[in-house]
Amino acid sequence: MNSLVRTIGLLTGGGDAPGLNAVIRAVVKTAIGEYGLRVIGIEDSFEGLLGATRTRELTSKDVRGLLPRGGTILGTRNTGRFVERDESGREIKPDWLYREALANLEQLGIDALIVIGGEGTLTIAAEFARMGVPVVGVPKTIDNDLACTELTFGFATALDIATEALDRLHTTAESLDRVMLLEVMGRHTGWIALHSGIAGGADVILIPEIPFSMEVVAEKIMERERCGSQFSTIVVAEGAREVGGQQIYQDEGDRHRAPRLGGIGLYCRDCLERLTGKETRCVVLGHLQRGGRPNAFDRMLATCFGTNAVRALMNGERGVMVALQAAKIVTVPLAEAISNIKTVPPDGQLVRTARDVGISFGSPDEVKHHRQSVGA
Image (cartoon, rainbow, N blue to C red):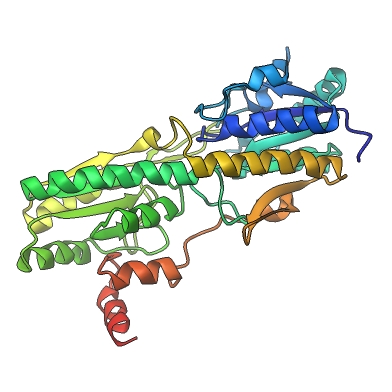
């Protein structure tokens, strides 16, 4: 056991996700019950380590009833001062902030950090690890785009919400002979759109990894009409883009805020009404995917991640992230986990499955893929 770690600092960063409180609960119960450690909760992500620090000790009593609770009792930030951008938009590291945070960690008596977050938060965590702080990361994002782990907690609950939304839109579309579009989150990947589109029986799925043609999507809708189906449902990832086009942003960001995707659903709605003449409506699911109670799977995964993060620290590991691989919780280097994002393989099993059941991805060569599936 690592006798140098007596007090763990715990924080949540980035957007909220179902299961954050379940990780907090698991970390506190394991640290106190199994290893006799203190746990200091750092509020508002890394921002709580600056200026007049915002922290509080977490006891077993503080985490009672947290397992089904959404959000995070520590607060979180998906913007902050630890990442700035120069005039060209390139990220720069404010060294003086890190030095201030390190000094405050020492003053607070925190020996190690468990950091719960996605790519951006874990990039900051990796910098603390480089500066000598024992750090273990816990992968959190509804987008499921972190490398080195098969799943991130929060994804399964977001998928449930998106699938239920598609189920509800299906009945409306069928009743009114409409085209119904659902725009879902996912940043630069299409995991939520792909999984929910298959589970919810969408007719078209549009994802960043497969650039689409509006004409091909329109033809899919008209083909369905010729076959007697007067309605269609489409799920589009916020980062999807047309062939030769750019992703659509609702906020270009600035030195302190990253650009924010959004608007592709409304763009597709307008194009499809013009191309097909059919009444088309768009629903932007937005932050409904983030909020509320985590489902059973995310509670279980979050608990496993939390307990294993404490165990990794006490086994002397540092600069690592806990991850799910082949149904086992393992640790991987933080540097490897944040080196790139995990994208949908355009020729992978899930895309093949979707095409085999008649779902279109709107790609210019879509007919070729479906012919291959018939002859395979």
